[in-house]
Length: 469
Image 1 (cartoon, rainbow, N blue to C red):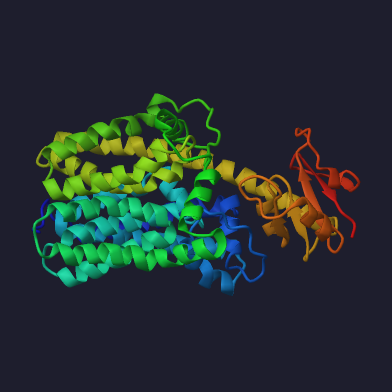
Image 2 (cartoon, rainbow, N blue to C red; image 1 turned 180 degrees about the horizontal axis):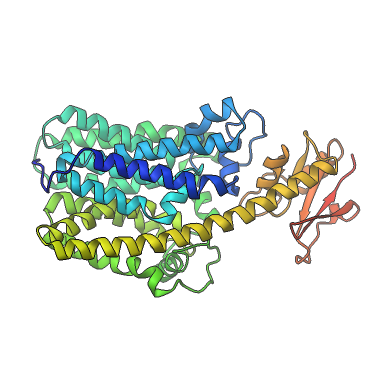
């Protein structure tokens, strides 16, 4: 496929990736300790901590990604810096796939639009899968389009590898991503489509085999794992309005909105999101057919489960959607601004204003994340002062991140992370320290903990009941 769009210096995309790394280091890395989900993924490969319960919806790709770092060091800042470098390099690599298709100017602008979102910056150094799915999706869509041009073998290999990566990071999302690709193959009368279909299915198989094997080993089969995943997510079904409302309300945080009963963001801070469907529609109307419609189709497919099947949301859920839609939006902007200095100036002003809004939200959300993780660390330090040291068990609300900080195993007797029974907790308490975290606002205290020693955890608003083995 011929290159379109104005050719820009090679350094533009490199500059965007470098800027992305710098912003992460300045605003995210310096203010972030480990969050709840991060400790779950890390504990699976951390030789210094017991593995936390790994629920059915999760996939292990991000654990595999950080395993070499965790094996060498327990330093969170080192882990963050490594992820900054990896995510910035991956941003460059994913969008560079599109340069032969749409030109360097459009690709650099698309990468800038995506990297400029606060949730993209915050996700770069996090041990979370959503950003990696987003970049895998961008690269996979680009390689798919390049299978019809020169370098077909390389494109097929790239397509297989990037779909395998997406399946490793989150297997169900990779299937949604593959659906529009397979639909295009079904509508193209070309013998070469069989090789492309094989690359798509081969990528899904390579990346998803670990998820499938684990489904049979731990969950009783793929059907059971999907059913348990649905239950964990609150019952995936036709939540047509709830998912969209939750996505809008959580646009600028919190990082998990469940249940999502907060007020929505101000219009000035949500204007880009409200205009996004109109910009994409305009891009589809005036843009080149294949390079515009395919990323839009993939974005719609990846958005479907989060907007239509869930009744809660988190800003990170739609990262793959934003990454894919940045390409047609960038194409529209380049097309409109070409040759018009006034329009180019207006676009620059709008981008600066948009960047200022995103920077404000980034600061607010990093501060919120820091406040939460500081409370986890204080609770873990107080448990250590009270004599709770490995081997030990932490249970109750917020058990997992606090247990990880304290070097203990975590266990739950109810909820989405149920991994043991009351009998199991009582038996453990006879041989090792067990800490039952308690929120004073909760009227329910398990019967087994009522005879244990109660302590206040300073600086956290929480209490703990400790067994004495």
